[in-house]
Length: 156
Image 1 (cartoon, rainbow, N blue to C red):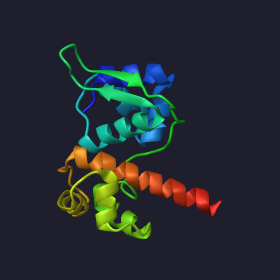
Image 2 (cartoon, rainbow, N blue to C red):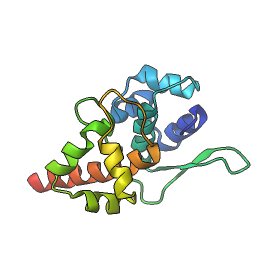
Image 3 (cartoon, rainbow, N blue to C red):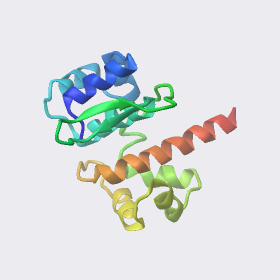
């Protein structure tokens, strides 16, 4: 999970406004502001915000005795839109997205660095559930986003 302080630090490092982060993560600016104030947020929303910021070039540093933090990655990329919208990004749609990209379960698990069993559990998550492991969800979402981006680039 990320903290409100980490989110503020990440935005500052990337020189992004609240609206920029909200747009990239498919959440409202008010949601970003609430997270920054350390108010409760849905796990999928936190994952979407974190994934958007990581894709933009920030690395989150876990509590290491001195407190959590962030740092810029080498070779940052531009901000990309990611998120967990009902129509495309909830774990319940991962199987459909994976299959439409022609990625097998085995290949997806390997590319995301997760077990096949964990991937199958994630893909079986009911649409209205918020019970899934973010350590599995985030790398799977990244693989899907990368594959979807490649597909769009090839189509151009």
